[in-house]
Image 1 (cartoon, rainbow, N blue to C red):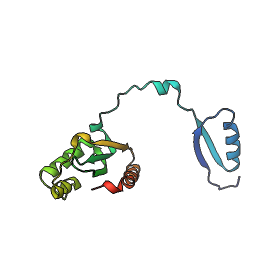
Image 2: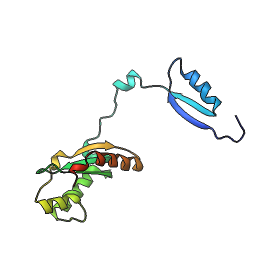
Image 3: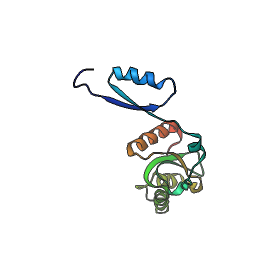
Image 4: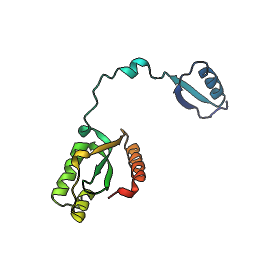
Length: 146
């Protein structure tokens, strides 16, 4: 290894009989390898916390569908989903098309939203990851967006 060469660190799962060889080979290229254990049976079987109800989750990509056509609205929010839905509902009641594409669709088409069918498509704690996930979901459903 040369002086001043930058060391790279990686964390990979431990595999019996293979991990020592990976560490040795990576060491030749100035890559420090750390191993982590895989999920144990205990980790898989015991979930100590109950999952949060959908409405109070934050950092989600969500989907709202029109009750009268096949159009859907997909967006992300870092706020609690129930708060964002309240904002959409308020915009629809007030016909505030500046604040919600749902309100614009309802005004233009005379349709209403199926609020009881709001779903979470994805979640992400990091803002950048959330934006990427939203973009991917939008690309998958581009035909039915409003």
